[in-house]
Length: 146
Image (cartoon, rainbow, N blue to C red; front, top):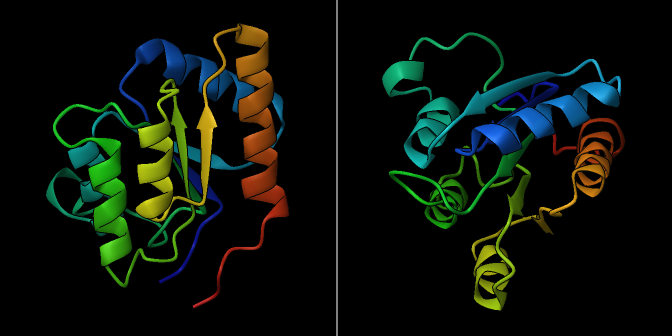
């Protein structure tokens, strides 16, 4: 598997998607951001199946920002499937969610999340949080080599 300098955003809320993309652009990172809007699309994208069977580019993104509350397949189930497959077992996954439930945080880490980040309600704080995530995961962190 090869990792690209791409971020995969899995987000069903159009407003949160816009805010996240805006915050990432403001960091001036020259990375591609791909967006899918439900858990099934995320799995199809990552495993190159369904509507993404002919997807161009490297096998996996550098990092996945994954919401929990998603249509079709929720984020925790997506994460569990990613960790169960040798192709995606090491893929960095950050849970980016509005949930403040302890059980969601615990389940995220039990399922193999690399990080759990609660979406701040304030726009400025939200933008700053996403910008820090982008810089860390795309410019600072060293992904595994395969």
